[in-house]
Image 1 (tube, rainbow, N blue to C red):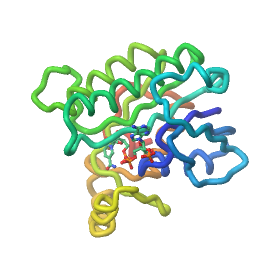
Image 2: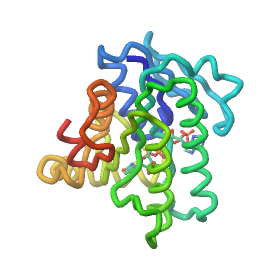
Image 3: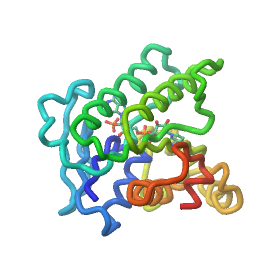
Image 4: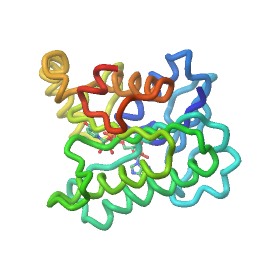
Amino acid sequence: MKVILFGATGMVGQGVLLECLRDNAVTQVLSVGRSASGRHDSKLAEIVRDNFLDYSDIAPQLAGYDACFFCLGVSSIGMDAERYRHLTYDITLAAAATLARLNPQMTFVYVTGAGTDSTEQGRVMWARVKGKTENDLLKLFRAAYMFRPAAIQPLHGVRSKTAWVQAIYVATAPLLSWLARVAPKYVTTTEQMGRAMIKVARDGYPKPVLESEDINSL
Ligand SMILES: NC(=O)c1ccc[n+]([C@@H]2O[C@H](COP(=O)([O-])OP(=O)(O)OC[C@H]3O[C@@H](n4cnc5c(N)ncnc54)[C@H](OP(=O)(O)O)[C@@H]3O)[C@@H](O)[C@H]2O)c1
């Protein structure tokens, strides 16, 4: 399986990249990001670029892939609606439309979040934007899966680049670890996210939206 990964420098993406490199079913990983992942592996190739809206210059390099794991995303905290929509909807759909055209059989996995609003009509801005993003991705691909984690425990040295987020994860590590065992509805891990993405890309899944509990069951 050949995989394109967006967001490999982020907390979720780092964990997903680790699992892809560990799994023999994944033969190649192409990371597309604003900076290099910092990992070196014979399976890994990287494209570092600034433009996440137009991929015409690198289209030939994006063809021939079986799956895309889209872990690029931002928190809505402190962000106005227009900017959040641009970074969430515009950037995701620009990449997805290009990939769907170049790889019509591809499985697309998108990291969204618990509480996403599929109706696109609710009162919470981020949830509406994620809902529209999910809905339009589901129309683009034959196989698309929306991962809606709640809390995520970083494992295997995965770190958030945002200092305060990392501090919270360090402070709550024992609690998260315990919750991940007793309350899989609310907590998953970066390892489980990566393992589950590989599994759905390989075998499919009975429904397109996976909550934390579904991710943990894979
Ligand atoms: N972390 C959680 O507990 C959690 C829980 C539920 C859902 N999620 C969702 O999971 C997704 C990933 O979250 P995360 O925690 O991994 O975030 P993160 O650590 O902040 O990483 C975000 C990733 O997106 C990239 N990115 C952000 N803005 C970009 C832009 N304008 N252009 C190109 N790349 C950009 C970052 O690249 P740079 O390294 O270049 O900044 C990084 O690779 C988000 O959609 C988030 O809502 C996260």
